[in-house]
Image: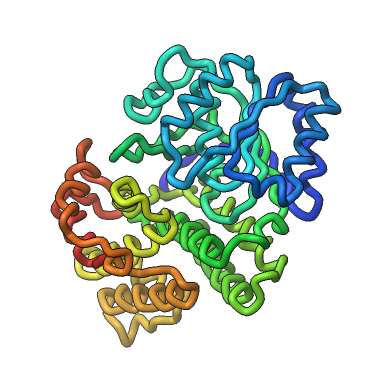
Length: 386
């Protein structure tokens, strides 16, 4: 078990009517000029917009908004919002939605106090000297960005991340009822995203981190149980609540304790979604399965351990390699039952861009910590994903 430091100051307000705490939270953060970042008119249909407007009006907060966020959010919109925020002297950014809106809000919070281009944080790794506070009203259960220290944005063919504790939101309001109206596809690719965050943390080469191992295994079991409940009844609000909480647990860095997570699969998927604009959760399902198959021959011990502990694969009857393949089979069945694609060919993606993506992913060296992947290894994993 390796040493670690854990820090996450996000205040979580979870459950029915949690949005009613917004006014109090804005007052606690001394907000005077608020920029609302969201995607489309759904927040008005859900009644969230009215809650926000009432809160800012009662507190006398200057209000501005932008509802143009799209999946796989772009730096272009962030730049536009940074300019808008500077003009309005914004001192707080509120995101409503899922990872795309939240990550855009985090970028804007970085960019408003900064004299340069906000892309510098993502491309050049500039350390922020100042950042505006961010708040979140979460309406999906997927990215976990509502309590994470990370943001991911795209600029053309580049999809890059920025990580710093200063962009952890000040608060996250999580009312599971807001996820109940999501289309089935969005619900289940979100679940695939949650699972990917749990698996990236589980696939660590650290052999002595039992507490975190068992926490992740328990979280995966809980995710499977509640996914089954949603498949039977999409309006099961308790299942939706469990999954929304799991989304945060999976990505608030608590499950990094005592180990070094992998993240190789995420780097590969970022190339796919930058190249083809595919849905991140579905892309993660596809890449993770291919990664497990690759590791079955290369370094199977971690996937084999998960196969035994979660799916009951007997270590006396199966080799580590065989158990790793069994894990891939079990996860494939899980994704297919949820309607999530499991191969690139189902998305009409072939091998023509594999070399380009593999080289782009490794421009700064190998990726992944469980077993570092060079461009050749990434190409092989992409082939296994076809």
